[in-house]
Image: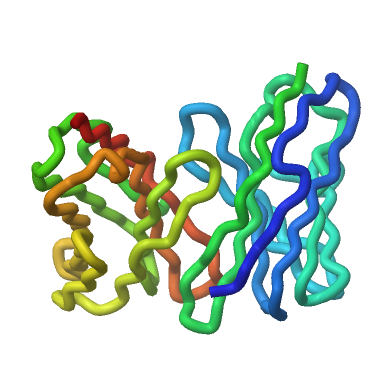
Length: 113
Length: 111
């Protein structure tokens, strides 16, 4: 399967600031996704990162809060804007491979104080 | 609304025991069901099941899907402490690629 890396691995941020998370894949993939896992919860899809066009957001998530870039088929960024403690979560990117399976990056653990 | 329910919520076993995890789903236009193991941050892919009745096996882990009764089970035999994790199941619909996750089952294997 594709090798997926994320940066940063973890961060502690002050409320009101923004953090950009990067996701890099070692091969070209059509479908890339961003998920959030709040403490004690399961994973929830934030959006599908579309190459060359605006991301497709799930209900409850908006572009102003979670802007996403996808400049090419191997890279995407997710920004968490104007953070509050409720944004403390693990953020994960995933890719769908030709087999149809989805594979996850190592995740970014974000703590907002 | 699509729904994925896992049971039990958690369980504690001793090394060598066998565990069976359950995942039931209600989704329209079902395509596949996936199982993941999550130890720290990232879920690790275990299985993807698309066809009913065909068991998938990897070492001590196996899984099967029943598309008539809308459920899947994940079996772990001869458990080891390294099997301690949260096990997640998720479904993908035929239209789109979104994963809908269940709440997970937390497994603790004691020495």
